Length: 302
Image (cartoon, rainbow, N blue to C red; front, side):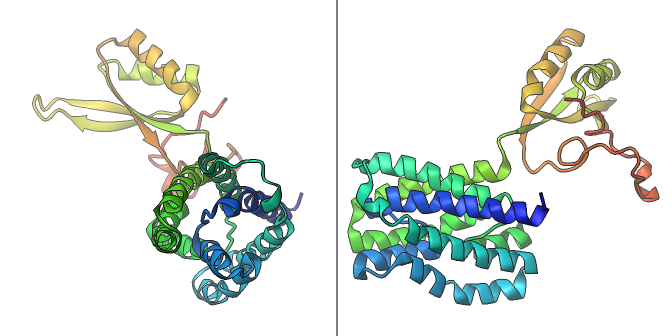
């Protein structure tokens, strides 16, 4: 399937899921979505203005900003995302009358998870539904802060407005929904295949490194270190592994050196061979990268 076609189909799926979540769980309980859609929902509750229409109108100035600062693909896909979200908001509007969930907290949970899945789905392919997504994408581009984090902060402003117009209780329910959307969308954006950094300090570093490469199938990098107290020089082992491989490495290290010192940390945004690229030995690396090339990720076997 064409890559761009697949991308736009993914954006369509994500906005469809969000359209269902907003109509079936958010609107019946006066909950708010984020960004321009959330602003449109406030106006809908106050004046009855259609969210699908205000979502398009209020996004126009933001897309002018996106046109100037973001890539052409992002600009086009953002307009597409805004239009299809508005379409699904209108298409699934009857769900507001058909909802069977009357508990606001259950609506927060179900709607938050569903809306988070929808947003995370389109975020994974660089999609956008306009509004705070545009601001979030610009912040992510220049400051590496996730779109979900920026959106959460912007939505605090909307939450304050919601508390002013509709009372504290609906605002607190909305805050719960915001948090769920934030966590779920970030999880779908980053993926569930979590990675771990592992640093190992051992007198048997070569044996441990060989075992990790041959048995676990992960690459290992040596880092030169020096003890601050003893001033003894030694090699540290560094590797990035999948979550499912951590237990196996712990067993190997404990077996080869029970006195080894090991640190296991969360890793995010892992890129490169063995993780986001297929190993292709026919591709020649630039000469300046051939010396001291890290073996990390070279032994991808699982």
